[in-house]
Length: 148
Image (cartoon, rainbow, N blue to C red; front, side, top):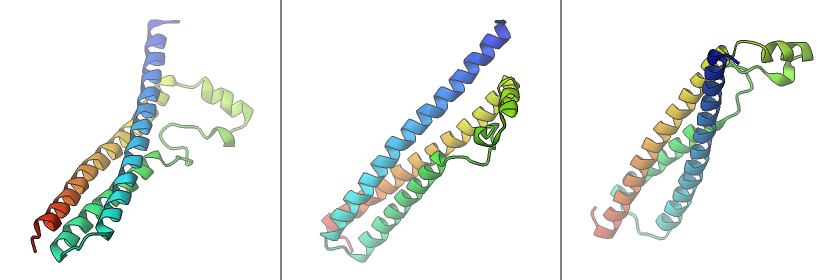
């Protein structure tokens, strides 16, 4: 195996591993966001909320729901075949052979684009989660402090 082939194989494995890491992080963050939403709803049900706390807390919940939407979009299966992925289920055995023997560099480029899209979605979801959580904490402080 040539040095170029080894480098391409290593790059391919690295990109696939990054996609798997991003998907794992996304799954963990989605579970966390769900738990925060459920906890915030449970707490808010039992508190006497004033209009300011409702507005701030509602915005925080909205941001958390938007984060969950981004996370779900990030892990949504891509059945259209974009980003360099052949749709194995729709290919004939001959087409699969051609696709496997095809250009590894093109597959790396496609996988890398997919990884960047997933990573960007995850990053935005983390930002929304942090902001939404901060707003929920602020709403709780408003209720505890009695600010109107």
